[in-house]
Image (cartoon, rainbow, N blue to C red; front, top):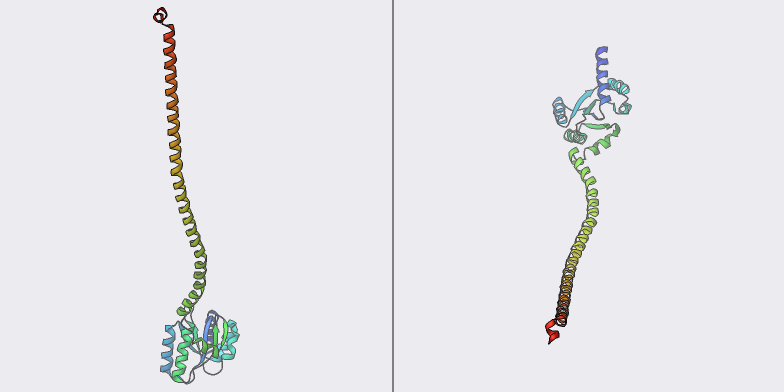
Length: 227
């Protein structure tokens, strides 16, 4: 391989290693070309590119990219699954684990998960996790459930308080209406009684005035004096 070709490969690998937050390193020794192609297709479905690399060039690229954690994983025939930002790390690990189980030759050496170094055993455990969508759903459920319970605890006293207030308002409204009716009746009766007394007093006054006028007329009449 020409020097310029090696430099080009190192630059490409350094760029891939620098931009990939999540990747898995595997020993592909023993896999046939057909098995490798099948594995590539399965990994593409989960957002990962499977690339066979030379350790000497990959070490240089890892040093340039600041991914020194990969240096201990570059021993023997090496392949790297570069997981894109929209890929599913758990699904990629499952696909690798399934191939390892089917062929008995593929071995996980480790990897990076969101920049954090993983051992081979940790990659195996990653393969046992549910898919990303399921994990997100479980996370949302874990977050929402306490909030729902809290909302229920807050809402219950408010509903109870509203019920008490409504009952009290209804009670006060009924009492007030009942109280107003007798008061109105009593007031009306009092007014009627006052009118009757006033009428009676007026009649008495009128009679007295008529009597006084009659007596006065009798005293002043000439005919009566002559008789």
